[in-house]
Image (tube, rainbow, N blue to C red):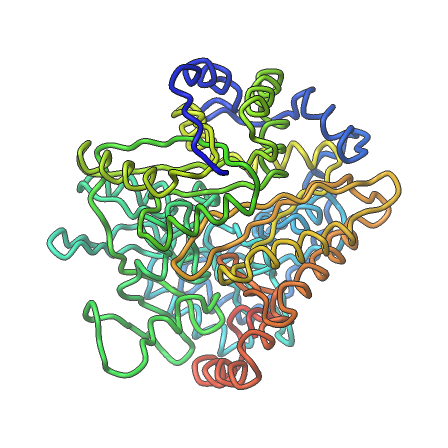
Length: 554
């Protein structure tokens, strides 16, 4: 019989074991700890090696193919100083942050380098640049924080004479704020930390905190239908979008005049998620919320994935999710203990076994609110639903440690890649009735594709976005790199996972990473040929010459 384990007496001791066992707040994971290397060697067969990123001087950057007439037209719009054609400038905007992108910057595979980087100052200059590219037959890739992990910002030329990256870094303003309606208008190049800082000065927050938070932009969030770690409390990004301003080859397009409308389909949602293929988003009007005054983040350990998923479903369907609700499966829980823990986590595991937790699944729940009473009431409601579930509390130390280290993933990945690890993620979502099957199918597909003599993959998974009807699944893979074919190793695994996801419409090809290049072949399975034709018709109408983000989405 499942039951809640009361840990009131030993919880202080357990809290002490957890405290200091995770990476401290703000600490850069620049090197792989010795205990992490030992665990990886024992678990995956890794023989640690030094594989640092290649210096820029070692990467081939050809001459710019941007025609002189096109360059002159662009310089007349943004100024010659903001049309960058030197190799290092172009190399710095070559691709995103996927494992394959990073491997290309380490000298593997072919790196698509743009012919120029154009840096406009405002939405009007963006409009004129878009029109100039259409006139001169030059491809244009919108670029915000460059955090795409699906090839969304690759500088693909297609059939164009050249391709530029349109860097929106100078579109960095909070245009206006309406505190009565709780609306804020941002230019598309505002990075998420700056957006939070600008809003905080007015007492508001956007509440959008994906792992890419430190680099990603407001425009990028909108273009990819982003979802943040606090989506249970604040919603997905498309839920926050009230209006958009878009530059297209046909002219400027503005959408959003009221909180709701029956004036035909909501065309804002046609732009949100369009990945720069229909136009360049230059401004986004978003719904904002008052900054929370109090918060409490806690960690719990539940026994087994199935029980954990059932518990999260119960929270979602009863309306008692925390602002953040994140469940790790046993493999991800072990990875977290091993890579960040050290000897104290071994004591935690012994403690859990003694209390009947055979398959530890870490559950992080965070509550945020305006008053202590409100937060306490929400926490009580959450724990009431969890009553009867076999679990052990880790207290606030585990919750706060996760919160403070939740943006450290990219730095951890760099350290793992330096040590010779193939480390990558992928995500999907489905309905609750298919969730466990989807997890099994994807895990099995990845494991089969990546297992080889001397290489045993770790495939970890978590739920971080939950809904009344279903949830997302986010997978992380760790396996020794195939030094003979590092690109093909992951390409084959990703293909196997995508096939498993889309077979029998088991899940979506992307819950929040978008389509880009990687997922484009699978989009017809999800939206059908009619859906593809609809998107293609919109593309022809808005971008008849096909200059906007060539090779992406459709």
